[in-house]
Image (cartoon, rainbow, N blue to C red; front, side, top):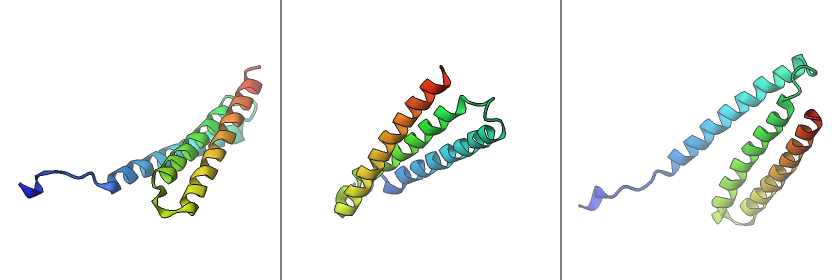
Length: 101
C-alpha cells in the first residue's frame, strides 16, 4: 500500500513548456520569413509575431515566478520577464491598431 499513491513528475511540466517553446518559436520564424519576403502584403503578421513573443515571455515569467524558491535572482528574472511581456503586449496593440487603420 505504500507505493500506491502517485506523485506528479516535475519533468512532465517542463516537457510541456519545452514543446510549447519549440512550437511558438517555429511559428514566429515562419511568420517572420513571410513578413520579410513581402512586408506590404503580410502586414497582418506583425501583431501576431508580437503576441506570440509575449506569450513566450509570459510562459517563461510564470515558470520563473512559480519556482521562486531559489531566491532573489529567480524573482528578479520573473519580474523582468513579466515586464517584457507587458511591453510586447503594448507593441501588439500598437501594431494591430496601425495595421487595421
